[in-house]
Image (cartoon, rainbow over the protein chains, first blue to last red):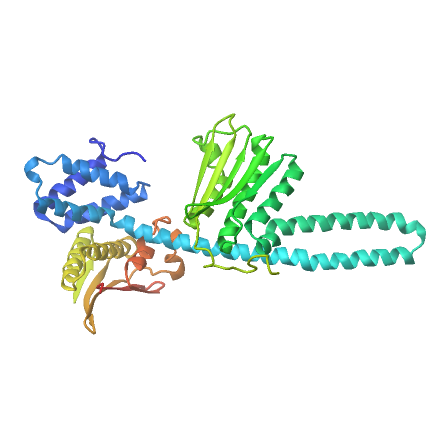
Length: 319
Length: 131
């Protein structure tokens, strides 16, 4: 974020004028000017810190006799006016964040319903079809057998596609057995398809609140897909563990790596989505990578106390 | 009760100043007074922008010993066709930054917007003292 406190800049001059005026006459006009300036800076995409830095620089440039406790307090009131639009905007962003979380939750619920419908309902219909095809084979002349085999082959393909889709939408294993087994299953599937061996190490061995499990699972999915598409790795490893009150998921590979400071790579939609998922739950994501030196993505969420939260289908034991 | 006609930028100053004075009277913290002035600015700005003129009325409230300030912004401008949209951040002129009417709604404790297409708009919002 660029500094605003360029002595030549219009912003600095306007803020200095407002401050000097306010220290002279404590007028509403000065406060209003500071408010309008803050509002303009917000619209231009400035952050809060540059504005505070500007305040300090203008304050520091006042003649020494100009600084008394009383005047500092007055200057603080003027700064508050300048920051007031940011306050208004911030509460809007908090609301938007809560709304996004709600939308994401609803999306996950929809996906789960869809996965269920695909798996159970369409699956059942397919089973009936298989039986009918077998019956038809007995009724029809032997010349029809090749035809029927062809139909059965296509039905097989439809079934496996349905199963894969349903699993991608919402793996039942995630709801039934939890994050560790679900990630392991995901990794083995991707390893089989891509030919990259993926080692998984689950040291978590407990259930997390469903939003946590879903978020980490989706990140693992995205991370592994990226890995297969871009990394040219020959080995990868997923590690799930708890450390100092946090749950951590590390996705590492020995592939070509990239420069995380390069805007293109580190700001890809996939990585942004992973980071947003973590932020939404108060967590964070760190990327360690260098061209030619592999990539390690570390996701971390603050862990809720054990036993406090039992979502649907808690531990598999006892089932 | 104060009626401040809003026809030019200087009138916004008068409305803010009276709001600030009433805020002091109502025992508001300095932060709440700043936010009240901000709400008044945004309402006055809306009047100037869309109706060119109108008025802001300020009332000191007292409900069972709890003090508050009611801000009523009135104009006879073109009115708002779609109120729900006007209160969504993305559709306000602030471009999703939470300024304007959606911002005022969040700064105040209650917020009501009545508008008749072609006959003007009345926004009534109250901020209560913190207890």
